[in-house]
Amino acid sequence: MEIDGAVEINPQSVEARIGIGTLLVDDVVLRFTTSREQDVARADQLLQEALAREMNISMAHFTMGALRRIQVRLNDSQIELQAAIALDRNNARAYQQLGLTLMWLGSTGRGDPANQKSDPAQPPRPKHRQLLLGAWFGKSRFWPPG
Image (cartoon, rainbow, N blue to C red):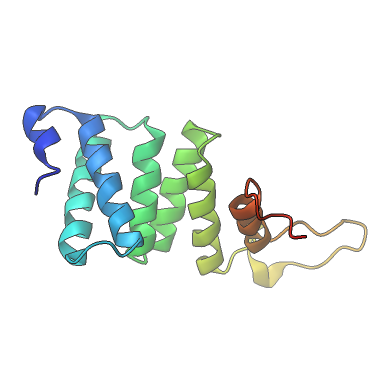
């Protein structure tokens, strides 16, 4: 791969591994790749190497969380995305991916959905779908409509 040149130039670079892993995951998510399985495997390898060397980089956890969601490893995705947010509360992409992951898990983010009871004294909290749409359209020139 041509993009692996950054790792070849500096084999110890954590940032190069995270950057290449992020590019590969983005390509898979956006369906820009013709070699999905190879790109997923390579991104997984690079991100594991990066996290083994440095655990405190939000972008590494974000990308690993997105990768785990692609792999339908939703509990692992949630853990990685929560770590990304804990390291950088301004990581909007991690919040967005966490919303998707929680939606696929069927969670409202308030515990077990089956055990929830509505309390008329408490106003309803927005669901993850609403949060996701708010994050998606919040800064858009197309929102609010009208």
